[in-house]
Length: 104
Image (cartoon, rainbow, N blue to C red; front, side, top):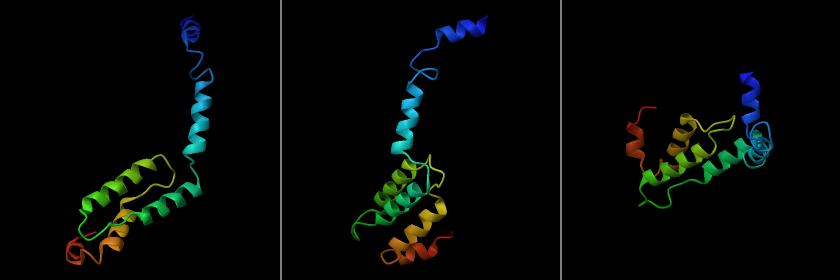
């Protein structure tokens, strides 16, 4: 009996209605969980660089973290290993002494 009453109280626009279908379609359209999303993520990562030698490296790391959060729900995630490799690649010429002291 409680199950029947509970079902009567369910919002017809939520899970038993249409809203969950709309949300699923939006997720599929704007947050694809496929190989292309992983490729797009790596392409965006490769564009993140120090804007100039005077830029604070933390600003670049914030942009990387933003990208990491954007793709957090994807099957292919932005791992710390990939991030460290990227930082060494783009900052190696500007900060060689600092990076050589890091133990990764």
